Image 1 (tube, rainbow, N blue to C red):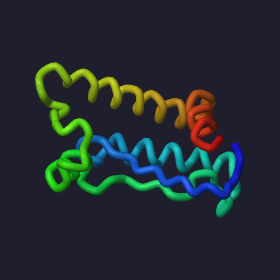
Image 2 (image 1 turned 90 degrees about the vertical axis):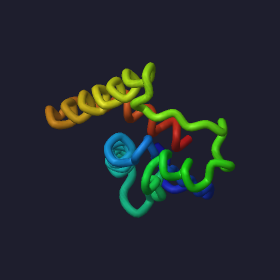
Image 3 (image 1 turned 180 degrees about the horizontal axis):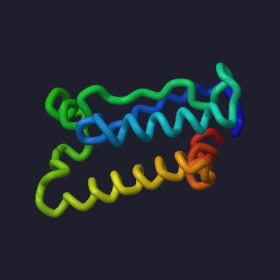
Image 4 (image 1 turned 60 degrees about the vertical axis):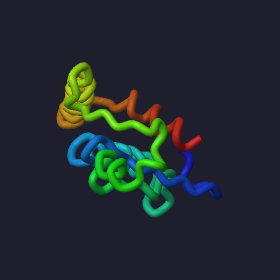
Length: 114
């Protein structure tokens, strides 16, 4: 990972409500960035979680959304997507607790930083 570059990158994490998945993923990315770069020379110094999630953004700014449609994660046929995301996040946290490597996550951060 490269440290700070001249390009400013701002990443806004969101999920439907931004209460679980988005904050967890943001925290993992932040930890990986600090693992590879010494603060304050981070690769991704600006990461945010969208308050209220996509649901609230859609309600307030539907014309800025593409596609111009909103489907809840609880809508029939989409329930499995949320469950898969939560299972993946749980597995990553478990690896972290057990001090296992984060190679897959490290690679994701590397792609963002180069």
